[in-house]
Image (cartoon, rainbow, N blue to C red; front, side, top):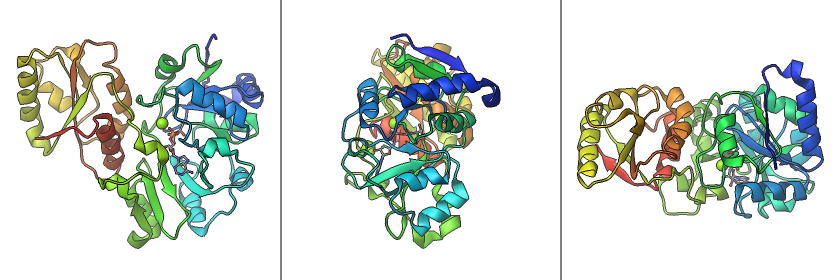
Length: 353
Ligand code: TXA
Ligand code: MG
């Protein structure tokens, strides 16, 4: 299959391209598209056959449910059995935006896409192209991140093409994603808002809106040895091709810790790649060639780190690195989402600085 990549610069001026994309979705095909978090791989979310194509293209385990993307409230009502008061509050505050709300589903949502759960994840993206595409399709769009299962999520059309070229007919190119990490998933089916996956709508923002006692974290996120409630969170994820180890600790100790570890690994004859801040990489210039460095932004600049981590992890795919070292950051605010992805990408291998 030939994969067409169509650049969408002005949603209003490119009605035809969006109409064509909507047509592909309505007739059961797949379209990859930008959102403000990461690129999604979309299919008609009310068509079980079409959604089966998503699992096949990604190599995704069939028990891992898909979330549905909607353009407006009436689409939420089309698929949610009830909209609990908690979800109403979160929608008023954060939708459209980088958040997915878990609610009880209606029977119109195919069993195939919810992995047999009685609930469905609903996300109203803010990105113009995503919104125009959902409107053009006229149905909720099921869309996981547009990567091959287990790999880092793509944050540009080029990165999407690296995984899906030849597997789908169309990629809409809306430029790089604003946030760079997937949406915050919040379970709204109980009496508290339970964070199942941290994202750009931070725990702190939820607490400010709802109060500390109304916000909880899925125990699986805080390190306990339990099965996560977002089924996809149990799989190895976001992994680069070479094994990654994180170095975590005080920013002031980072440069020394990296220098020591790079020298030690090189002494064992290993080719080392480093994904770290500008500041840490500056301290490695003498011992590490530039092509084995990936700069993820300035130390502590969380929006920039979030926007860059997946591309930085993927930048080693075509390089000869045997092992990778990555720099950890704070777990406050957006840092919680960043560290969640980095811990998974590294299989929880960590060195303290
Ligand atoms: O930002 C995002 O959410 C991106 C963009 C494309 O919108 N999408 C995304 O989808 O990250 P995906 O499939 O890669 O991640 C969705 C996660 C999976 O871990 C899945 O297991 C979980 O949501 N999930 C889906 N439905 C669920 C449900 N009913 N209950 C709990 N978790 C659910
Ligand atoms: Mg994903």
